[in-house]
Image 1 (cartoon, one colour):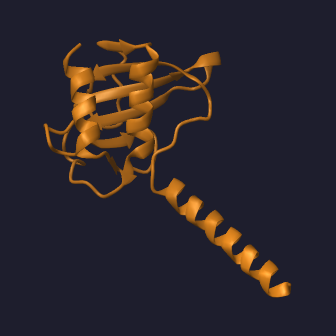
Image 2 (cartoon, one colour; image 1 turned 60 degrees about the horizontal axis):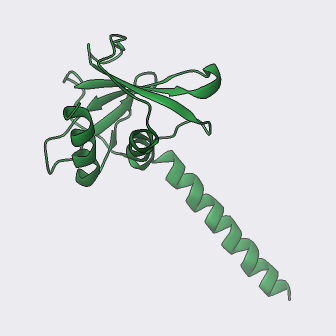
Amino acid sequence: MKALYCLLFLLGVTFFVGCQNNSENTMVLLDEKVSEINVSPSNGVGDMNLDISLSFKDKKSIKMFEQAIKTATKQKSDVYNLKPDYDVMVEYEGGLPTHAIHLWLGEEGEKSTLMYMVGEGETYVTSSKMTSKLRKLILSE
């Protein structure tokens, strides 16, 4: 019986550690309802352009942006010396602080790169499929 409890305990710890590692390697948002996604041409790393050119308030667009952000995985990128294409501002209901994110939008078939405006400069990469969805949404507006 002790062996069974030990095995269950080890499986639980392994599962918990696995979940922790995954969250450290992907972008996160607050566990609050997103009310709006605002997009503007970027002025450069560390500067958020508040002159909003696109605003998405529909559930489908918001969900797509959330998916792109939450599934982006931490990966070194060579964009440090390049100006981001867009600044993305994730607005939450209830007046919570805005998540400010820089976006280097990849070409069709390429991956895109995301980076928190405030942070340690870590970059996160989307899939090429997600880039295609972002391009359709941002460039068709």
